[in-house]
Image (tube, rainbow, N blue to C red):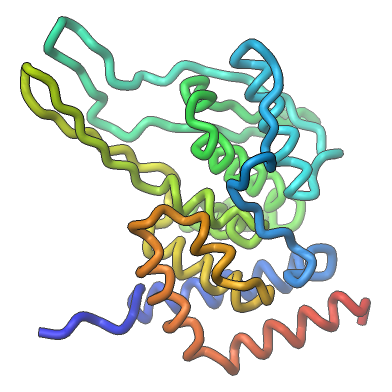
Length: 259
């Protein structure tokens, strides 16, 4: 009869707290939450330069890397064309049955390669979320290389991107649904990006906001309208964990003070 007061269930909540604490213990001495930028899709935050898709992608990547504090980490970028929806006749389209990869990360010797779907250049928020995820792979490779052997590594990588301040972008692009209508009929299309669900990302974003001390209104102003109520629900769930939040804040203060 009544809806749950939780945005995510207890198992997901426990996973979030456990992995967030692990990230804070490993990354916190160099990346304090109180000094981590909350990256938002504000006008002017990402100035896209260049005339070609490659130049624009490189421009966006440089800004993402700067916000992530990884501007001096060497990365080679390479675009690829995914097998997206293809129009095969005037009224017919073919859509892949399996989810298409938005980006990849690999290390070969001393070379680090991040590949991205070139179609995302026309969807900057999606490309920013993709680059944040792939840079999180790079960060984990430096600080938590053993995490690559974990079954939940990709989930941890999404959470790391939230920890790095990109949670709004990941939540906004986690799931997209659109409809279209013409004289020939009506159709719908959906796309899933990332690995954590929308609700889990919103709960993680709420945890980041409370642990780092940001004003939730800054998040609300830039989330997709359909996500705001669930974000608020996540805040209420996280606020019940005051003892854990207090422990995060005290550890963070110690990291910031160089203790």
